[in-house]
Image 1 (cartoon, rainbow, N blue to C red):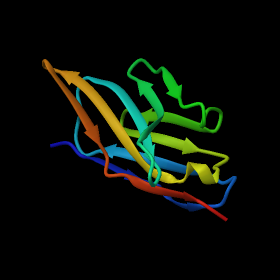
Image 2: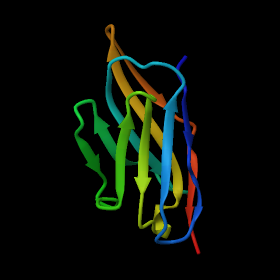
Image 3: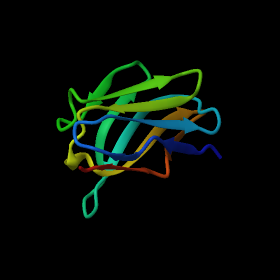
Length: 119
């Protein structure tokens, strides 16, 4: 069973930066979409950014121009570079991978990493 392991969260001051990483414990074939979601206390989980297998990206309006999603194929890892962080970015961040291979559609989630933006 492939697991996604996230890292890079923490406490940062407003205006600061963090880079989240999400590493798959094994190979995932037929990846269609990789993404990051976040969930703040009392809120629903929301999409932050996605990256297709073809390299197209999509960002929530609230993070456009500040966040960037990328992938390292060799390391089987997806990243989220977060700059100019704001208190409203505080949330638990989850990575997500969707794949279709051999007639099966699979979805993987990481365990979440806490990001707190506060002075």
